[in-house]
Length: 266
Image 1: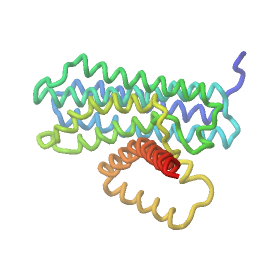
Image 2 (image 1 turned 120 degrees about the horizontal axis):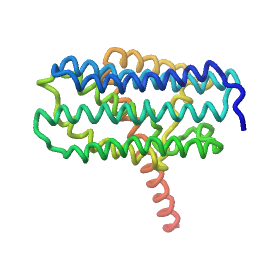
Image 3 (image 1 turned 90 degrees about the vertical axis):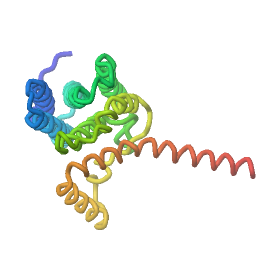
Image 4 (image 1 turned 90 degrees about the horizontal axis):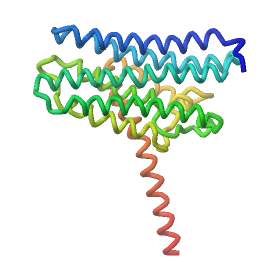
């Protein structure tokens, strides 16, 4: 099968996603060459924000492809390749460098090989999550309103928002527990990505069709609060979404257990 034509605008948006991931990786590499923690932190914060910018490109390319009737197998494969870089490699490197820098001040509390292993596990599970999605793309995840497993952009958002929150503190006042928690957070995110835990497709639920005025007002309010307290709001939003999947599983389990118990009593 020969590729003859591609949709220009969706492809450019996907390449924008890939470019943001690459620049984020380049900034992380540059940050390690600075002895000044302030300059290194600015590089890492910019890299984390570029992950969010990559999310914007990722959200737009699919929407534009559907609007212009330019969806294709080529576009889906290119999108997954870009996502591995922007939502797999870039967040893993950001977390790895932050942990290394933090623990070098307090002492090597975590073996470098172990840190490298959990970072590699995160990247590997991102690739597996995306490959599985492509294979199962015929089953309508978007149609049911749920993803199977934590979406890779959401996992990257957890890491990037944690990095931004941690780096906003003065170097002498940074909470070390955040840096200590990152090596344990990465494998949790990795396993959730390849799991079957259901995660709601919130973007589609909010933007698709007409919504009640109260819900629109709530969204506007959350955006305003997010702009005012962006570091804290981002972390709160992504961690809230992270817990949403296990919350749905727990709710279903309790509901089924209650139903079975009532059935036995009946």
